Length: 193
Image (tube, rainbow, N blue to C red; front, side):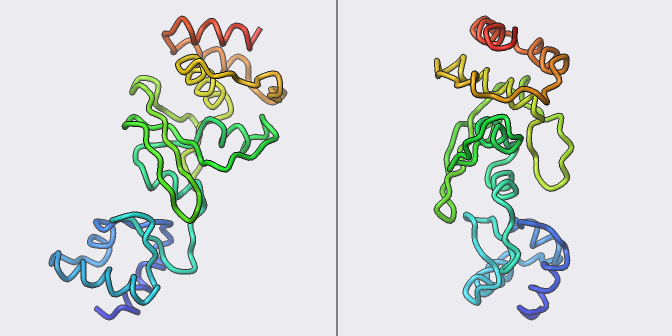
């Protein structure tokens, strides 16, 4: 398969990012050596851009920071400071893209941007927001995640600066009831009265 044909086929999939396995499956390539050579040639020609080893995107089709965050470390969803800013709950825009994962806490740098992942218990890992482009916690889940991590780490939250005017308090309390933690409950009750 010619490199340009491969480029066009990948571009037509409308996927934001590709793993090596995605490329293998999309192009129906069984020969691992040929696959590595093809990817290497596409990288050298600048048709494919490497985000990290085994994760790529198509030239001129740069994925959003949120899509990259979801792809770099999986499973994960956008939350904490990044989601608070995304929803307008806080006014500051963080420089770091913050996400939640069930894997170990980790940070990655790509294109001079930091992608930071905090580990959460599997029982608390979920997103109830059905965004098609990327995985992001709902407004309410973002607040719960933020309070949860602040209660674990002893961090100060500037919650007095939060705009909670569009928050579904009933939904917020329902999500909070799933967190079995005395420090969380104490901080949550101080914030949401």
